[in-house]
Image (cartoon, rainbow, N blue to C red; front, side, top):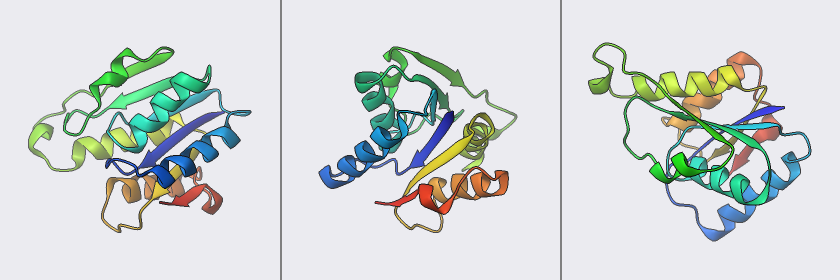
Length: 145
């Protein structure tokens, strides 16, 4: 199963890392691909943890706007990097590059797992909304961090 991940781009505290690890361990038996968004925080933690602890293939979607990107992900084994191209005047258009990246994560995923802080206006919430509309995010896959 291709599982997409979304969550905060801020550094994780130890208890948050433990939660993410326990979720990843529970998903390993069915996960064939992990799809993340290349940002610091959840994306980087998931990608690095999987590279170290599993043989899961990864697809890492890099937004056209390169702020808050963890460039060390480019060197991970078993990872395919997809760099979203700039479309029109997108480099100056706020959240549009991230929206396109988030839509791509959902498009490539069979299931979406969210690590959510509860912010109504966030990229995580945007991705959750896209995933809900696509029918790949269930309430049991939303983890409060």
